[in-house]
Length: 426
Figure 1 (tube, rainbow, N blue to C red):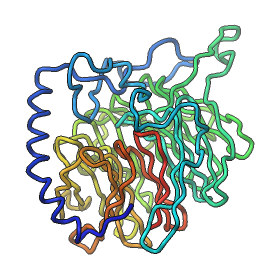
Figure 2 (figure 1 turned 120 degrees about the horizontal axis):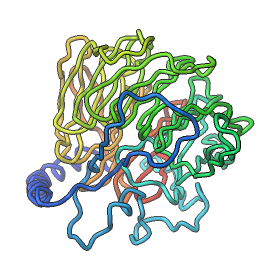
Figure 3 (figure 1 turned 45 degrees about the vertical axis):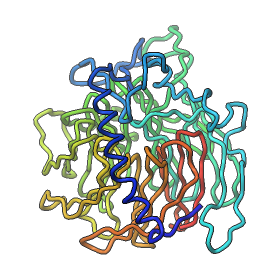
């Protein structure tokens, strides 16, 4: 359902004090509890040797409120996104992208349809949804990636990014473990899909033939984010390493750099002249386009800081020096940064966890997906240098983990921890 922002503005103000009280209570509780591991280090043998600077053990806390009591779910339950105990989540027996409801499409209703996403991992630090330039939606559910055509509203198939039965570098040694997916990203031409796993591997898939054309065991830890620059694929790990790959080359690794904190977001600018990386330590780093060479001394051209992890992040398509970031539950601020000056030119409190964001160029708007306390989407008008909210979209019962925009710019796709996908009209 959609709510006009003038009608809900007072509603948000009314919740401001209660949200502050809620957040203070959670922070007091978290000081005495052990954080839950969201992205554990890869374990077990890799199929091929990879590159990483140093295998430092690092475990990250979910950017969400801590467990309410010791009787709550274990770390493994939360890590795997096990939500079967919730009445608001989708049954795992449903087929992926099964239609749960369709809207009447009245002029006042922006909800187009609601689809099933069983086994969608409830992990703030993953990037499991993307839409290609051809309108093909890729969504990772468990250890598989499902492909749904947004034009025909049909399921086109699924990919199983499991390692090969026999490791090429070690003939005769079996390697049959299923690969848990942590990130994915379409190539610019929509023909290839890159998939990052929790075992540090990157796989490149020919989607038309549903074949795995390249397997690069690049990292020693979880691949948190992926981004393409023409034919170059960049990847970031939870150990803070950023690798650049040319899949066409016999040795695909062409460049390496390191940042402070684990990489939870990564995106090349619209003109491919800068790369933005967001860290779990709250750092937004901007790198130049010179990616060649293996060195840990390369420094970003600018670094900005916010109080929480930089997970929700996106470059503005029409003002290419600007980038938006969203704060987690300890922060809740939506910020617009000028990467040339390294300054924040606008900041708006949302009183909510910001899990994801996407720019909509046609509408000159920014869409954010939220967690506690209301699990909604908000559309913001960007009239430089200020943001103003226009309307909210409600429908998810748990946090809105991922957003994607259709190629035509008139549809927004949201995937939530309630294991549902919503299609909205912009």
